[in-house]
Image (cartoon, rainbow, N blue to C red; front, side, top):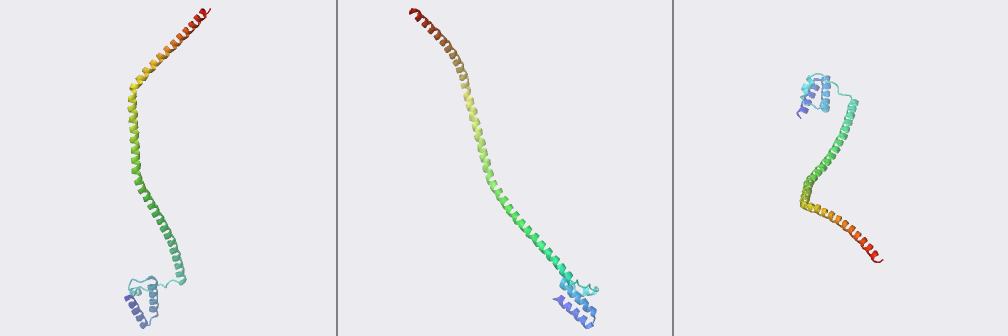
Length: 178
């Protein structure tokens, strides 16, 4: 509001002085305020010297078109970044869920593996105990095999004796019958 008042006072003073250069400077100042915005006191701008003429409307339109294309490109890039962010958030959620599931499964797998290991150790210990218990039986088996071999040899000897005796009996019977 103060800036508008100062601008009007400067414009009013220029009209009363009847200077056409003042009018030109004020018009340029108004254009600068409209297009660029002024954060300084307009009188300071007037005391700096002549202000350059504003750009031609065609140049402004070209600049606006360029800025519009830049805005559209930035919007497209922004949409792509948002889409990528959404996908990454989904992936992150899926990975977190998978980690949570694995954290629940891993202790069970460890417990199962530990139980299986204990079972194998117990089986091994039982087999060792059975082997130690079978050690005395091994000596008995060796002794029984030796006896079986002896008995087999005796049986063969007795079989041969029986055959010899059977031949003798047959021969004696044949002699007696004559």
